[in-house]
Amino acid sequence: MRYPKFLLNAFATLGVFAFIFLACSVAEDVVNDDTVIVDDEVVIVDDENPPPIENNYGKYQMTTVKTSDSRIIYTTILNTETGETKLYTAASSSSWVYNLLRSENLGGF
Image 1 (cartoon, rainbow, N blue to C red):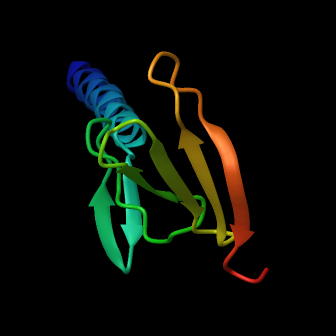
Image 2: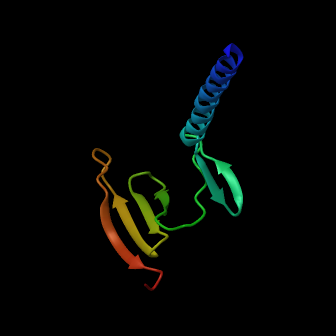
Image 3: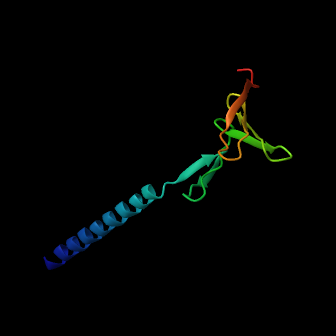
């Protein structure tokens, strides 16, 4: 009768180790689940390198132009989602406060 108890304890120990191994391997997958599917490709997301943005919604484009004597700066900002364009000007060399000169909606929305 000694052999079946030993065999039973061996299988019980093996079951406990298998349970712990499976539980830890599943927990590791949940922690490292930083994948994003882009165009049917799996992309791993790092904190240092976020995935590329595939649309232009909520982005802004900005250009800056100085006059030849560098006394006036014109800055144009385009909201690519709505098509709204704003032209700002700064004419003071001491404070460089930007004032709204003109606002137009180029998208027609």
